[in-house]
Structures are given as structure tokens and as C-alpha cells.
Amino acid sequence: MSEGGAAKGAEQVLPQDGPGAPPRSNGELVFAEPWESRIFGITLALHGQDRFEWPEFQARLIEAIARHEAEIGEGEYQYYACWLEAFRSLATDKGWLDAKALAQLESELADRPAGHDH
Amino acid sequence: MSHEHETDPRAIRAEALETLLTEQGLVTPEAIDGILRHYEQDVGPMNGARVVARAWTDPAYRERLLADGYSAIAELGFGGPQGEHLVVVENTPQVHNVVVCTLCSCYPWPVLGLPPAWYKDPSYRSRIVREPRKVLSEFGLELPEEVEVRVWDSSAEIRYMVLPEQPASLAGLGEEELAAHIDRDAMIGVAKVGP
Image (cartoon, rainbow over all chains, first blue to last red; front, side, top):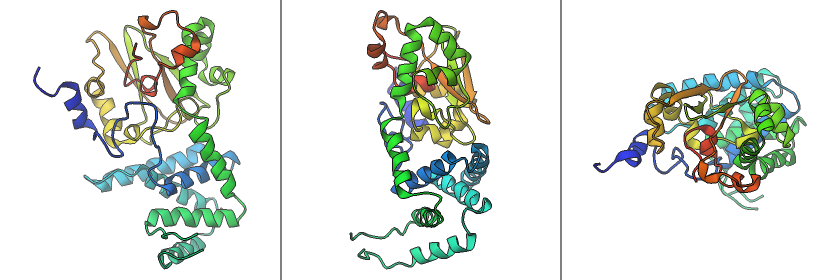
């Protein structure tokens, strides 16, 4: 058999390292960035309080993923960016927070000076 | 404490959401930490491995598991979000099952933990449906022609888990020893349980 076979094929479907790599054991870091774990935890905390039915979130997640996949082209797929967008829309639609206040706080946080002590 | 502030807009959005929801009294940072600890420490493929090992050693449990996954995993103390409508599909010498969620990466958290990156990847989600044998061979799993491949696409609230075949080489082992051989990929269906 020529070089390649199963291992070469695997390179074609998924990258061998980086976030898309197929893991070969059970251990894996599932969150690439701290914010991914925070938004996951927030979503589950509110779900645990029965503040929404999972399909309400799931429908938004499916839409966000479809939009993202249509836009990224060869770019990196960002699952938790879709999750974040889905949760943000759920949170404002449910009235858990005010969309204007959220936009204002986001703008303030973005304008913070870097390396601030606190 | 001194640190660089996040400039990633997604990190900022997540921080703003947590800040406002905390101010509203809807979440607390401690509750979120607790949830994350739970998923880091208590939930993972080791749970599913125990379920499979029990099914291999206890035929009556196996029947209950295939009939009603949710109730059967609850017998072992597992449950929670994404496990409420668990369907367990059994591999046999004639049928190989593999699980995907083409639309949004649904996954049976209580038994497998959170999904690996490749499970969420668009290429796995689209290709495993279109050309399952090819994708499985790229994972290193070559299936004989005569084996039927069934692809289970999680939809609505159903979550799937594969009950792998027990290799002959593991005959006679106890539940705990068996569980150590059962890994996540076999319960998704992209691998078999090795000897």
C-alpha cells in the first residue's frame, strides 16, 4: 500500500492539531477560551432555574450556526461564538436584561484602558 | 489583581452578559463556577463507560438500557441536561451505529460529557451523513462491506449513544476492568472498543 491509507485520509477530513483535530483519547480541553466556559455556565445556570426550555435556545443556536457556516468560508469554525450569539438573543428576547444596557456595557468594556489595576 | 483586559469582542459580550445577569440577581459567579466544576470533574465519558460495562455484564440492564436510556442511566446515578431523551443504539456484527448532530452538535452530556471539537466541526457534521464509511475509515475504522452503517442524527430533544460490541478479548472481565477499556469514540461510533 502506498503511503497514506487511513492516517492520510484523516488529515483530509480534519486537521491533526488545533481545535478541529480528532482526539485519540478521552481527555480534551473542551473550552478554548475562558469566555466560552462562562457563557456555557451562564446558559446552564438559567436553564437549571427553568427559565427557558432547551429547544428555545437550540433553535437560536441552529440559526446562528447556519449563518456562521455560510459566512466563514475557509475561516475557522467558532462553535461557541454561535452559542454566545444564540444566548444573547435569548436573553434579550426573554427580557432578562435590557438590550440597550447590554450594548452600553459592551461599549464601556471595549473602551477600557488595557492593563488596568483592580 | 492586574491583568490585560479582554479586547476580543466575544469575550467582552460574554463578560457584559454575566455582569448584567449577576446584577439582576439571575446568576452568581459561584453558581457558574459550580456548574463548570461539575462538567470538568463529574461528567465525562467515564460515565458512559460504566453504563456500557454494566450492559455487557448484566443482560437485564442491557434490555432496560435499550428500551429506555434515560431511566437506565439514572439507575447508575447519571442524568441532567441533554440526557432526558437518551436513545441507546446497539452495535452488532451486522450493524454499526454512529452518532452526529448535523444542525447544532447536540450530544448526550450526562454519559459522554461535552463534545470534542471534531464532533462540532462542520466537516464531520456534513460528511458523516453523506459518506459515513469514508469518514469512519479516516478515523481508522474499516468496516466490511456487509456491515450496515446507520447514522443517527440528533434532532429535537433526542440524544443518541452507541452501545459498542464487547470484543472477545475482554470476555470474563469485571465491570470496572471493562469500563477502563471503553472510550468516548466507541460510544459515538467512530471507533470500536479495542482489546
